[in-house]
Amino acid sequence: MNDFPAQNLSQFSTVDNPSAVLECLEHILDKRALTALFQPILDMGSGTILGFEGLIRGPSDSPLHSPSKLFPVARQFGLAFELESLCRQVVVERFVELNLPGMLFLNVSPDVLLQHNSRTDLEFVPATALAPSRVVIELTENEPAYDCQLDMLVAAAAEYRGQGFKVAIDDLGEGYSSLRLWSELRPDYVKIDRHFIQNIDKDPVKAQFVRAIKEIADNAGSRVIAEGIETHAELVVVRGFGVCAGQGYHIARPSASPSTVVAAEVAKALSAGQGQRGGARWHNAAIERQLLRRVDPVQASTPNDEVYRRFEQNPDLDAVPVVREDGTPVGLINRHLLVDRFARPYHRELYGKKPCTVLMDAAPLVVDKHLTVQELSKIVVGEDRRHLANGFIITDRGRYLGMGLGHDLMREITELQLSAARYANPLTQLPGNVPVNERIEQLLAAGAPFCVAYCDLDHFKPFNDVYGFAMGDEIIRLTGRLLCEAVDAPLDFVGHIGGDDFILVLRSGDWEARCRHVLERFGREVTAFFSDADRERGGYVTENRKGEKEFHPLTTLSIGAVKAEPGMFADCMALSSVASETKKMAKKIPGNSLYLNRRGYRAD
Image 1 (cartoon, rainbow, N blue to C red):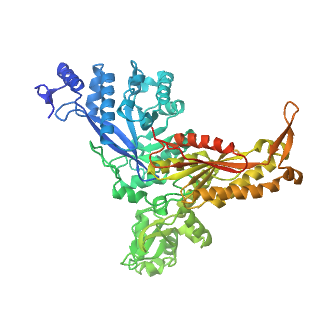
Image 2 (spheres, rainbow, N blue to C red):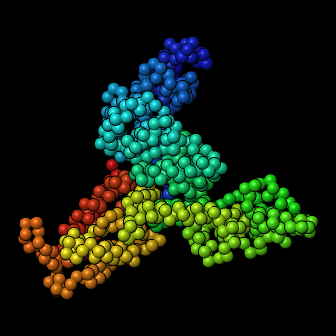
Image 3 (spheres, one colour):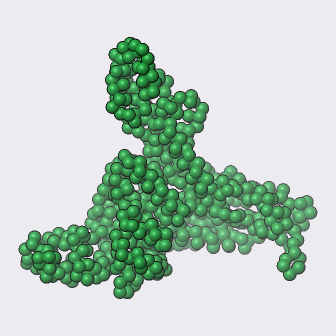
């Protein structure tokens, strides 16, 4: 029990007894009588904990126990800034004490952020041994009045960023000004309001909203977090849309001592479809998550009349699977075929009481739930066209699980193509910056060791000036092809981030040998792009702006490699900065060169 003044707590009211409420609030502030709770935020790609949102509770025997009462009271008495400052200190100190992994998301009200000298309010963080780079300032989007102070808010957030903190917008979609705030603030994270997540598996309009938010976030450089995930179905749908992270009761409830291990049920839902190439993690997701529809099957002995009644009662039902008693699928009944048969003279009288196996498609397309959308599309192309109209049966270890529809498959294939075109480099069709960053962040969050190799062409601009940009494009294509051929596709990732710059994200154990193999092949094959005379003298001569002759060596390839061990880098930005410096060191070495950065780094 907390040491509270002896009062009839049930009678506390800001209207009837404001002095008692104020006394209670002042006691909380004086005694630091607050409890920090933490709710895990799940990284959808790696299946690990991205971080925790810090929440606060007042004393359990106080009428201000709930934050829905605590914070409004503090605002009424002009103590919001003092309360929020204390809350952040309590949350940060407890986070450090528990030694929790990942990021800490701290709630900050925009109006409080703009009060007093609040931009120095988090100066205590480094003293707690918590690096600012691990702290996300989460702006709650429930104060429309701050819209007129947007410039000041952006400036305040910029000061926090200058200290190393990250910024998030909370409850996107709840307030009218959230999209404007997003466009001006350019947050690192965007949290979708729980309204759009609740029953998303049953509401196509909500699903479309989330898809649109995800696309905007990708283009704006923000990562999306879905709040309020409370069912398995919601988790599956959100994960399928490629949303970065999620939180909610289905993942874990807030706790004073939260677990750092993802629940087995949640981990299982996220286990398939990891490590895909191309950057967008959901591109190769299993069809169980992308296309599965739960349709109750009928037994082989079910009369056609009963199946017909099901179609009458469910206008949106296009097909009904037929299974044996053990759950093995044996066929599929198409609505239009059955209705057409029954519309013919005497056919209902002839077939109505007969088993549905008489009118079913006895050779439907049956696929396993672990098949990917891309693999299924290849099968459908090679099979009978009727499968697009009838749909297909999805099984789990040979037993009926559900079914998929042809138009759902076409929609997913179209999205794959659009996403691939959106993120791919137009010259090489390799993944660009967004997929590269996403892949690196996924591995960092998972705590997996890997290597980033930054590849860059040397003396490339003068080559373009002498031989023309078309020949320059061919050298870039050659580089991309050699890199793709050198990596281990299931483990490694090749990205083209622009111009003559490439990134390798390598998990194969022999990554160094693969890099050296690329250099050897490039040195041998690039000579074909030069004239015999230039090959013989090892370069070519150009005239600079001063009219002076300059000699340029043949184009070479430099690779700067950085090994990322668990906990070494806080985020993709920190790692990319080191990789860029390492690449510069490689370019100082004459010829086709590999520079290995062997320095140790610490995430801070």
